[in-house]
Image 1 (cartoon, helix red, strand yellow):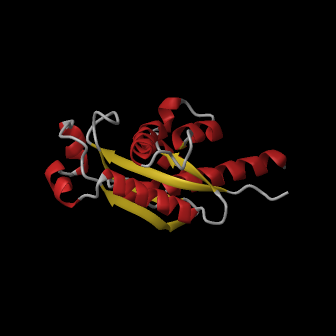
Image 2: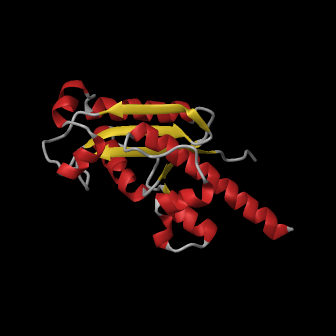
Length: 189
């Protein structure tokens, strides 16, 4: 029987507001967790003009600029789906990994279903915050990225650039996975 391979893909999005459909996804960044140089980045044209001022302020993105230079959502999602397929070309199953995955996954899921017809990640996502809580036994309040970094000491930092944040999240996930392995080894000995 062949071993099933899971391909962990860290995904981050920047958006114009808190919910898909009502607000636009403005950028996508993705990084193969175990091959972090293998990545995807895309800026998207907005679906509409709705935005929360703080959402645009934190990213530095402009709806006008994205209207002029971004890819259409349909093109962006087809390109992302192709990248995921290529990333998993050896028969692996893509696993969406995110820091506060429910937020990012909700936009990715909405856009994939609306513009491609299906989500290559299926209907699930792996949340780094919940994973960290499970590995360490910490409280939910201690799953903020600032608290996680104190435990695992990543070399990267988040900066609200989707690609940079995807790489940062991939590093966090790898470090937490190493922490879990170390913890499991200690328990066996």
